[in-house]
Image (cartoon, rainbow, N blue to C red; front, side, top):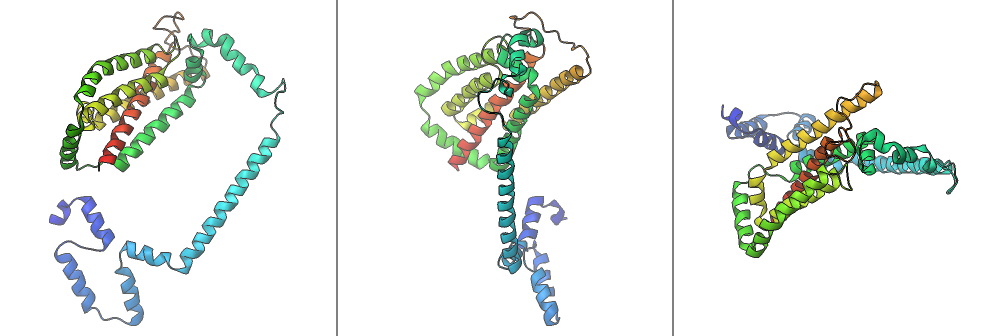
Length: 313
């Protein structure tokens, strides 16, 4: 019963290191000492009694590991040469620089400029391009940020943080500057409001989710710098950040998937483009800008907090 109640991590480490809890280890040792087998059986038994770490260390010294290393290096060089050859051959088919019929002078860019306002409803042509014409690419970039944050949280975050949080809080309190804290109380809300303005107004003027999210993320970083990462996590925990980022990413995928499906099947999108220049215009671009801004802002905030705590360890 006690073995079942033990944490899975502890049982896995016992198995990985070749140890067993309590009497199980003594019983295994007694059985091993009482066994009488031949030389072949004895060598086989000694191999199976080794831990995985010991087996891997012994395998690295064997001829098979050396042969595998040589083969791996040879295949890596061969793959690199093949990739280099493909790129060189492809470059040979590129058109000459400066020709009038080059793809850089085709109708795509001209369409973005001349018909972007009527087709997307966005006064900001860049926002209309990255969120409408190339909205699927933007979704991929948002997924990259989300996966990067999840991977860094999995690598750097520690579950048992009570003692560390107390120690970190004491360290941060000893280095806090009262002048910096009072200044941060004033400028942090202003920066956050400006970031929200840039996000919401992104389809009307230069800005959007990426730049506005960076400004909003910098406001949260200033708060964490001034009051400490422990206080920042109490105000906005990792769990809430992940929930907000997940919700924003799923929301973006849902509305962009709906727009792609409707456009591919010649269905009318239920959200009208509105009057260009109004805040509630450009159809789905406003909510997509907000979703991208949330992802960018919390990506910056989480990365800063995690790496700051890693430096304190």
